[in-house]
Amino acid sequence: MSPTFEELSVGQDIGSRSIEVTRQDLVKYAGASGDFNPIHWNEAFATGVELPGVIAHGMFTMGAAVQLVSDWAGDPAAVVDYQTRFTKPVLVTDTTGTGDAGAVIDVSGAVGALDAEARTARVDLTVVFDGQKVLVKAQALVRLA
Amino acid sequence: MTINPDLQGRSYPAAEVYDVGREKIREFARAVKATHPAHFDVDAAQGLGHPDLVAPPTFAIIIAQRADAQLIEDPEAGIDFSRVVHADQRFTHHRPIFAGDRLVAELHVDGVRAMGGGAMITTRSEIFVLTDGDGREPVSTTKSSILVRGEGQ
Picture 1 (spheres, rainbow over the protein chains, first blue to last red):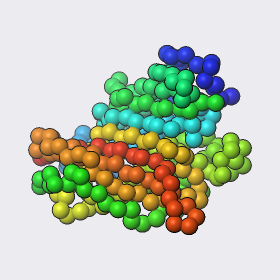
Picture 2: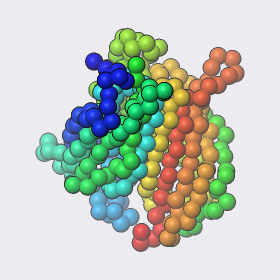
Picture 3: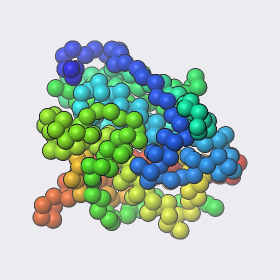
Picture 4: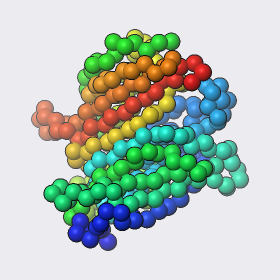
């Protein structure tokens, strides 16, 4: 069931989930998005430009994190505004062939603000990898019934 | 390589049309690990009152990054793509993107700021849907800041 505006309060938890990421996921995201920067799929290239290793596209993390909000809202079209700053890279270990995750991103969300006139809720997302926030000021504005 | 400070205020007009296909919406949705049926099942999307499959909230990045490519690949800009890091991103949806939409994007360079040996560049894409006749309506405004890292950064 989709939430209605009246039943929400600031601080309310909208849930959480863990996102497992592999190098193959980054190749898939590169293909789907058209962002083929080799720092997202080639170790030698990434370290050659002084990165610690292959890192996830910031847009992969941003795009995957908002699914918590889409599912909570009941309609992805309810997300009318979505923003974030990218503060730390998500380093994805090469686990090809093992079935293990190369990184795990933990996402949780809470209602940060309510606008009764616009009938919108601002959902503040907390997105953590390896004990550190990788997205900062990750906010989705949701229009409610 | 240094970033050309004269980029600020530059605009690139709407160029090619981007046709939003159902399979592209499904492919992008799977790539961001989305499972909401409105991205995959036309009946489910229509059940929510939409004309066709709904694109995920960050789908517009495909169109925005194509527009950005005009700037990044502009030899006058002086941007080394391999040293580009995404600093922030915002999507403001004036209406959702649906399968069947024909979209165009106008790119605006809103800011260029030197940072260390590199630069922070802020761009804005105004994305429109083409309507019957010669009209167009606003769909999304996307704003991105990219950091072009200098050597040793």
